[in-house]
Image (tube, rainbow, N blue to C red; front, top):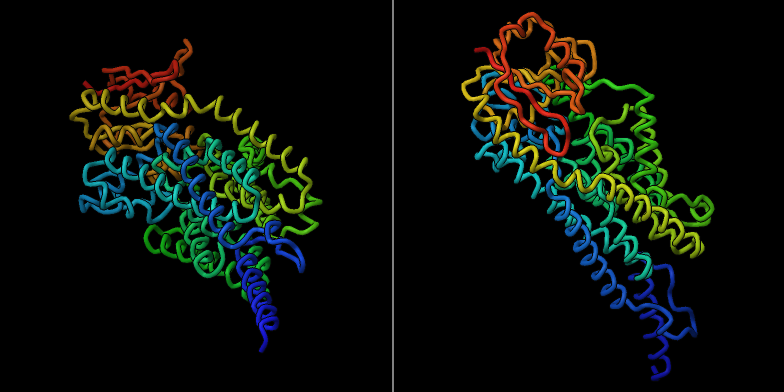
Length: 501
């Protein structure tokens, strides 16, 4: 074989290898015959660029989490109290001497925290915050790698900067709840193969309302990869099987498949639609994929994540939304729009791509500026409440309260949950979680000798929420006297602690 033939074969072989590698990395542009190599990226260039994408994403989300590290919610301390009781060998209980109760929607998360909860609820909260932050940072690096393999350096960097500026994602990653772990699993579900299927199944198992998104995104991405419909349907079926398995476990342990929170905090379609619409607009990232013509033109991954995102927002509306701030239930799917936008940049006009990005960035900045300063101080305010309430609650046998998370961190006494989130009896009473119809007999039956009620604030008389107003009007309240008033930092409200003399 002469040297000319050897050279020709080598070039064909190299072109085939480059084509295979670039197709795996999602690059559409390959050197055509006669094209100068400088016009196309080599494999080493793509790899180096994707590595920088992972590093940039990790750096940006770490900075945003550090800024909003103080964010948390009362429900996080509910999970942490459950975890501390598990660590003490007391079982899956909110009250140490109370019944086993389905007080935590993500079944299994309290068990995950238990090895780190021997120091009590506050220690478990710190561990939960670090866990959420670390797994989300790892997932962000994975996402940054994929984004840079699909978009140019300028557009990819802008997308990752937008992700870092998205306050709900950063805040919920460090909230101490399971949202950071679920968001990370949802990002890994955007990958390929069986591992992505398993990640989607785990995410749906932890958050039931996420099941439609997990099933639809795995179905869509499998089809985008060229898998047959039977194989793609199998990926979606795995997600649904995981949800069914968790429901079966709940039936065995608690007698019902749905989480207790479904009964404690009933909602309605009107609230759900409002929640879904506000989450879609104010989080900013869904706007990145509002490009119907470009989606139709040819962006299979972007089509898959956009359709799955639409399914999720419909599911949120039907589920009735959520009462917590910063759109917790929408957060796990938000990073998928970053990946969709990266692929859309190949087929969409540049002016349209950058216009959508600018609009999304404006929305994210507005939300961060409006809510960020308050959100980042929630944790310090709650910690101050816990420390100030310990002395007034010392010696109490049974405490009635609505915000049982921080109260449970301040006292080891049994707690009557006026919202019903941790109490099956109260959960089944008529009313919402702030308007349960508590009667005098229930307080006497639980031997309540202390109450923690939130004032209306702003110079208004009385208490803030309907259930607290109802409790304050019960006949047995005549035997209670106020012993402490604890200001709720950042507001004009305060908690009043009442005890039997």
